[in-house]
Amino acid sequence: MMWKKQSFLLPLLLSTSIAQAQPARSAKAAEPSPAAPQLIVAIIVDQFRYDYTTRFAARYTGGLHTMLNEGAVFLDAHQDHFPTVTAPGHATFMTGSTPATSGIVANEWYDRPSGKVITSVEDAATTLLGGTPGAKGSSPHNLLVSTLGDEIKIADGGTTKVIGISMKDRAAILPAGPMADAAYWFDSATGHVVSSTFYLRELPTWVQRFNAAKPTERALGQTWYPLGAEGKADRAFLTLPATPDKEYASRWQQTPFANDMLESFAELVLTQEHLGHHHGTDLLTVSFSANDHLGHAVGPDDPAVEDMCLRTDQAIGRLLAAAERAAGGRQHLLVVLSADHGVAPKPEVMAERKMPGGRASMAEVVNTIVNALNARWGTGEWILSAQETGIYLNYETVATKRLTLVEVEEEAARAAATLPFMERTYTREQLLRHVAMADEIDSYVARGFYSSRSADVFAIQKPYWLFTAEGTSHGTPYNYDTHVPLIFWGNNVRPGVFPERVGVTDVAPTLAALLRIGTPTGSVGSILREIVPAQSSLNR
Image (tube, rainbow, N blue to C red; front, side, top):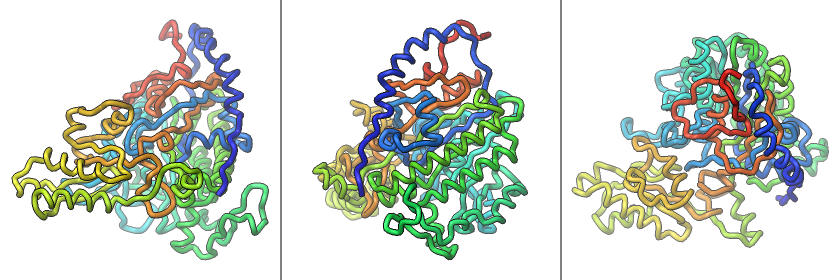
């Protein structure tokens, strides 16, 4: 693993662009508002930390290079909620809401009515299309608010198209919203691009042809080399199996080959669905997932992550070019790029840097809580589930022992707080009453709390501590997990580098303001004035 020196491209831009950008706000204020774009492409790169835009900027030559140098770049954008994981981050991107409003509190949570753990998008009322025959499908039925795409549909009467794509179902579904024309994702069991009967009766013929060509198998037996070191065996990151089995599917998803396939499918969506050619504004959401699969395995400081970022830059470059063609020129295209979360450094790397951190386990938290509750009130089945959002207590046990939920929550939180790697604990009662909201991290937790889905006790580890035995992860309210890129490019976007703190919650209301349509129902974000300058008249 190597620690790369940061590029000084953005700091150099900062000294000139900020000075240029500030006067431009008043200068532009009296100008007529530009025509709405024919096409919006909303890109999320899964697990793409903000500092990937600076550390590797000197080596970018494709879409990231273009957007960083020609777009509106926000230096201090955050996913300002807890937990910082895929489903909430993708929901926030196009709703402007946080889990407290959207209801998407995690990738999965314990569902008390059914008595089981469910994913954010699983839907037993639907069937998978194109995947394992008879398999249950997925939908946005757990999303409680509208997306930008839904508001576009409502405003134009359904004449435009909204489509979401990703390798992950939740990453395709949640940004697109309930009214989307389609969402497509990858089914590792079959190697197919799939969808759900929530959207369609059957896969379009063009998707079936795409699957018939077996695009996921084009990398069978191939070796992933760093850019500029192709063919050098001693530099290879990995060689994929030559057989399309489960091992191949798992490893393939950690390579740039997976992002390349998704980008080629995005180009097909643009042409086959005639995006950019409808009356109104079409929306395509694209989430690149391979970065996350790789990052979990090797951590943000591994050379493979740098190469993945460089190849993602190339893939985004191809996507921008295809989107420009579809929209009929850059002036008719608006692109926004961000990430659903960042990622923590591996504790072993932090130890080499003489920094704090380490590895723990959720099992240790659970055992500590159970032992404390047993010691005070006697043996019982105290915990139903332990998820990334926290601990779900067994209400039947609480009632049988004639206790109140509040006192059991408090005892559980006190016990968890005794662990040396624990930073803060919260109870359901505290969050319901908005107690102990002293700083920004407290606010992050409050924004992630939705009472009918969230846990009873929340336990947040100290910075750089992970609840994984290997690799790395994310989910905390610390900057390495919350700080993400935010860049707008295209349709009359004024280039500039902006240092003020903003949220990913600001994206959806900003785009809605540009389109002069309703703001998504759960939006808590603000309109970014750098993107939507003040106008002297709504008729301009």
